[in-house]
Picture (cartoon, rainbow, N blue to C red):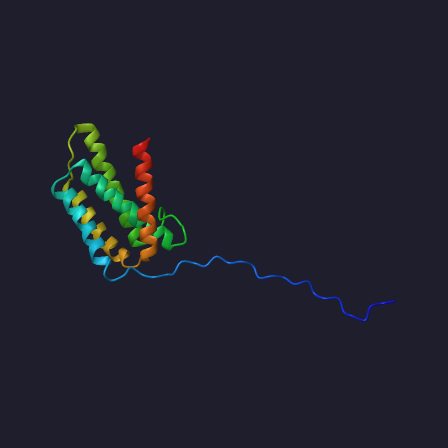
Length: 154
């Protein structure tokens, strides 16, 4: 005897979704301090060049690049043509040039054109810092600190 009831539809549950991080821009209280720290690192490298100042500036550039990458859903900044990505890449090239020169002549020197390049990059990165969400910046800080600790342990 056929059943008079209609067959029930199979219940499909909702797919679980992972909530995205809040897209909170850099908090106004945080931006001036972080920008000042970056500008001081640039001035310190230009005025009193030392390996420690190169390392400090390159660490800050890595954090900013990481924050920008996290803000862009994990896309790397290398190959991008926006002003902030170009500024980071040019500043890293200057730092690499200073380190290479140190390896050749055993002195840390920053030429006039390298100093101007770093100052121009710092201006663009100051603008970019204000657009990075604070959560992305803090995440990049943690990742860079972990990476440095791993390199020192090796």
